[in-house]
Image (cartoon, rainbow, N blue to C red; front, side, top):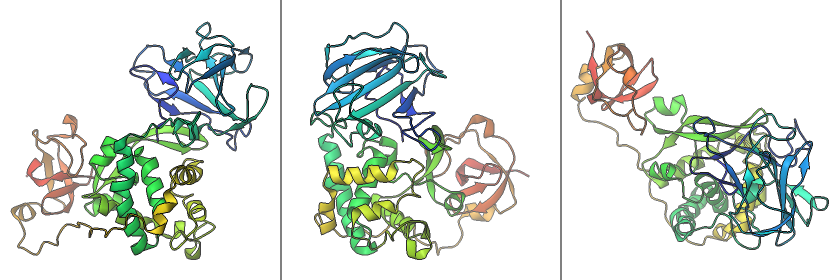
Length: 403
C-alpha cells in the first residue's frame, strides 16, 4: 500500500513508508512514521511538506534529533508534527494559522537522519509538543481517522457507490454462502483499492490485492503487475509484484472466500490465529484472524477502524441482500484440439514474434529483448503457451516454432 499524499506537494512526488514504522520491535520508541519520496532519484525538484489539516502552528523547533521541525494544533486536541525539514526552509512561525495544504517547508535530512525523508507524527489529547500521547499516524494518512470532522479520504460519490452498490451486495451474498462477515470483505476491499480509486485494480476486477503465485499462473490464471508497499524486516519497502486478475468482481469475491477458508485464518484448522474467520459473527474477532493476510503491522487495526468509521456492520445484518453471480470460470473445452495445440507441444522450441505486445492475460508489455530468441514450451493451452525460461504465458498467435 502506498501512503496517501496528504503531507507533500510536488507534481512528481509520491510518498511511501520507509525505514521505520510506528513503534516497531526494532525501535519501540519511534513515535511516528518515516516517509520518503519514491521518485527522489528521478528529479531534483524540492518536495514540499504541507499541513494535513487546518490549525495553528505551536512551535518551529530546531532540535539535535528532530532537526528543523513544525508542530500544528488542530481541532479536537490533535497535534501533528513534521521533522527533519531542509535547513532554512520552514515557512511558518509559532502562532500562525494555517490551512490544509499550506506549505510548511521542504523535505530534508536535518537532525539525526540518514537520508532525505519526513518523520510525520500525531499526538491525541494534545495542544503542544509536551502533552498528550502519540498514536500511529497511519490512520490519519489513510483517512480512517479524521481531524475537525472533515475526512482526509474525502470520499466522493463514486467511492460511496463503490461501498454501497458495487461491493456490498456481493459481500452480503458471499456472507450467506461462505459465512465470512460482509463487513470484513467490504473493509478489505476499501483498504486495498482506496475505496475503489485504484484504476488498475478495478480494471482487473482485483479488489483484494491477492498475489499471483506460480501455481495460479501455471493453471492459466490471469495477472497484472503493480507497485505495492510491503513491510519486510521492520521496514516499509516498495516492490513490483504480480497480482491476480479476474473476469468479474464476483469471481474475485469467491476467490477471496476460498483464501480465507485456508488454515492460516482459522484456529480450528491449525492456524496461528485466535479464532476461526469462517463463521465468526464478531467483526473484531474476525479481523484478528487477518493477521497473516498482509505484511503491514497495522492491517488488522485498519480493518477494524474502517468497519467502525463507516458502520459496515450494518451489512452483517443482511442489508443490500443480493444473489452472488456464479463465478465465470472458462468453459471446459470438449471440442477437437485447435490448430495451436496440434502445432505446439511441451518441449518444443519457440520464439516470440516481433509484433507481440503483451503477455497473455495481463497488461504487462513483452520487452523487445525477449523477442526472436529460442525458448522452451513448458505447458500448452488452446490459446496460449507457458514459456519455461520466462515462466510467463504468451498467446499462441504471438509465437513461432523454431526448427
